[in-house]
Length: 156
Length: 85
Image (tube, rainbow over all chains, first blue to last red; front, top):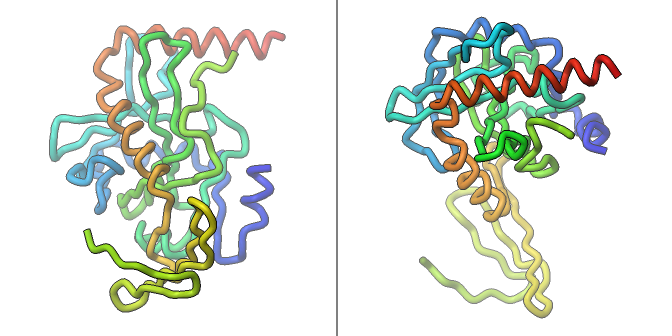
């Protein structure tokens, strides 16, 4: 239903199928990422750095860490492709404009992970995804009401 | 907070180009029509508040790499379980 609702959006609404740009995260590593409006609830967190998260396991971790440079706060994030199929980000032209880019192909979507006491209770926020312009390094937290706020990281 | 009384069909204008119209009133339910430029995000407040709360709950989740190593292992186990089945 969700992917259908994405596909049936008007022409001005571009939809990202992120499988095509999973590798693009690498292009943002080590660069400053700016969220001009901050994140929701963190309006003063504007300058961030994206880093891979190495937790010392044999295989690479699927996570990245988005660390704020304005204050001591960071977020654990994951690319939607590693979690769900057909997650699509509605990107109308005004959002592309805010990200300073011309095409939805240049957007890196990331989802924020919420840690919980029990590992199986850890959730990922599909409702408030981050969209980052690869070339511009500008990001915004979107609100996609149709998606769940708490989606399990480890699906039974 | 500015408080205004409006009847169904009446509107208020915010700034230059945002118009909020009371479409209908019934019981404790009000339908609003909002006309705003496309770049203005119009969202239900409880959704925004829930995401703010979730962001606060999510902050600094990467501070415990040892625990995250367990998380990564469980994810791998789950993935291999699935591909094996």
